[in-house]
Image (cartoon, one colour):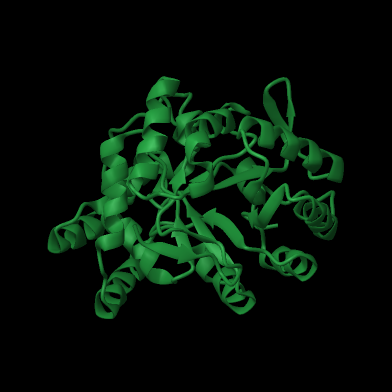
Length: 328
């Protein structure tokens, strides 16, 4: 498995990580726990060293799953988790990054992950009520205590990134990024390059769309997060087939699958980007990891990007209330 370094921090991880959220929430059905433990351990055997979870996934159950599965391999893997939501009666009820909440979240995460340190700790969403400098100082104290090794922000705006980095150097910013969501290229990537901060791409397969599994006739169960996402409405699924056709054409030429092309494209953008596709199936995991062996030449990338620039993506990536929490 190829490795990548997240910015100038020195944190080295597998070139493709594994996003674990979907094993516990958002994308039903959820396989039984033993099956997911087996999948996580298979990922380690296949060379994956980077695993992404969060306190709010479940809540709590995803961290418990990851902790149990990776306990035998703890010194070989990098576990990323997140704080920043106020969780009440088993539900997320808003943002909370007050110092005491961060400390409580970290203590809980350490227990659930069965570890004495968190490799990479993110603020899950920027809390407008707590200055980012205060958040950075709190995380800095946790680092001095050895409970956190590296830190980052998720879905944060460029100014917040700069302010946080000035207090406590960031290792990575995590945001959505794929062939059908390219906003980070506009302002975030130039800033990260300047600051020497890495980027972790979640939903690099467009919540499954870029694999070619969905069309206008696809219907999502009401418990599936995609049922509330504008981009997954039937008319938008149909409108976005043009992007899929482009990816399928490239895949046929490269003797690859659409998912592999979508991931290879993300990997080819910058050497400090690490995608973390999620999956619940071993064959999909193997397929995704195959993307690291696909080389897209400068000419191929230029042709792909030229074609992408002519395709208008229909539908927003989030329902409005969730989009409001990003880019702050």
